[in-house]
Length: 256
Image (cartoon, rainbow, N blue to C red; front, side, top):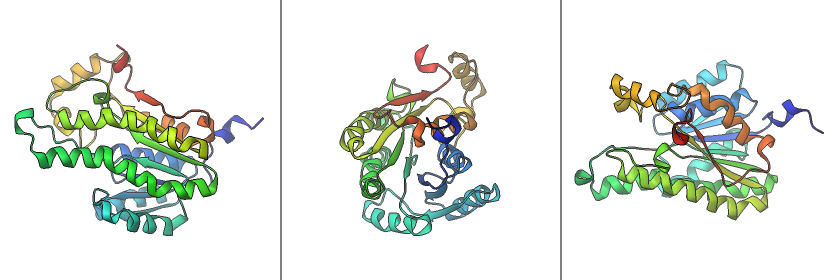
């Protein structure tokens, strides 16, 4: 029997985190680094990436970054090659890059619809498909998608975002069915309300923030550190027999 701490140890693993320059992606990257993984952060803004990677490195972990717009699918192979050049092929992939334009249904354009479906739903599949062969060659891989409260229920001004996040739950199941027998599990985390750039419009309204907190069972909204434990769990050997699942980290909001 392996010691319990060893089940959660990511020493020697390589993690690739999209949307890793800030918010939920950065929090998940920090958690993986804290558990011993070498982390490669991927996002568009090089200045923010540099600062995020520096912060992880200063904690004593190994971190690097690749500035890349993953919504440009023609560049995904190039982006993944640059990422692998730092620490080798990824053992862990976190698909955290996302966009929520918060538009009323009457104002949604074809371009804004396509942009949200592309980044939130299409890119996680094609990016994973680039990374999976390296995981299969290693005999082990973990893919973690990011779902949402809107995977379960509708919120105002969120039709394309909700559609994409409902889809990511089913895509997680489909990816798990495709790759789990090859040693690559796929699960998703469904965050509740956390302070990030995407939720800034919500957090700008103190009454709305208080109302959302009151609708949880715990009585508060999330702090980014609340994502650390579940991230390490799903990336580690502790979750070896879990695949195709979505875990909601929402203070009980979705169960109330």
